[in-house]
Length: 367
Image (cartoon, rainbow, N blue to C red):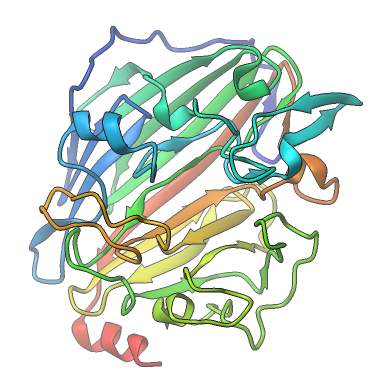
C-alpha cells in the first residue's frame, strides 16, 4: 500500500463544494505572508514573503490575471495542481491486476502528467471550505479520464501555518483500482518574480541518490550515487551547476531530474532548501513524498510576461516538485502509486519561507 494512504474511510466522503467562483482571486494572509490562488487548476498564482529587511515580493513565476492563466498556463503549468499522474509513464500504458490501461501519448511515445490535452491543471475546480488562512479545492474526475480507471474525487487544501509557511494537503478516493501521483508545479524565484535568472540561488537536496533516466526521461530503474556528479546537492550549491552544465548527464536545458530520499515512506520531513544570497529569502521544502523533481525552467519559450511585465525566460525559476517517481506503474520495485477503492490517498508538502543574514547566505553561496 502506498505510504500515506489510510484504509477504512467511506468512499467519496467529501466536504461540500461551494458554487463556482469563476475568476475570483482568493487571498490568504497570515503573519508576513500573502498567498493568492484561483480555482482554475487549483493554482497558486502568487506568494509574497519578506526579504531580510522585511520587504515583501512575489516569489512565483506566473501571470498577472486569472484570464491569462486560463489562456496560457497549459504551456508551463505555473503553480498548478498536476494530475492524474505527475511525471512520465513509458509508452503511455501499464497494467493493473493484469488488465491493460492505455493513456494518450503527449510526450513522444510517453504520457506526461497523465497524457492528453485535458489535465488537472486545465480543469475548473470547485471551491470548498475557506477561511482567512485556508482554502480547499475539489475535483470530481470521471472514470476513464486520460484513460485512467476509476471515478476519482480529489481535495487539495492550502493552509497558511505558523512561521510563514504554506501547507498543501492532498486527499483522494477512487471507485476502481487506479494509480495516482499529484504535485504542485510552482516555479520559485526567491529574488522576486521579474528579477532574472535563478543561477546564483543555492539549492540543497537531502538525498544521496538520483534517478537515472533514458533520453526520453523514463527512469531506467537505477538509483546511482550523487558522488562526483552535478547531482550532489547534499551541501548547498548554486543552481548554475546544473543550468550551465553541458555534460551528457544534464544537457543544455539544466536540471529536469529527480532525487530519491532515504527517509521512511510517508514520513513528513525536510528534503530541500533554496536560498537567495542577495535578498536573504530562504525556502525549506518538507514532504511525505519519496522523491523530488527539480526543473530549472529550461523549456520556457520566452513569449510570456509575468506580473512584473518582464518576459519570463528559461532559467528564471525553479520548480521543486515533491511526488512519486515517473513510470512507477511499470516499475514494481519503485514506491507504489496504486490506489484501491476503500482507501484514501494522502500526501502533504510544506513550503516554509524564512530569511538569513547576508553574511551567512553569501558564505554558503560561495562554497
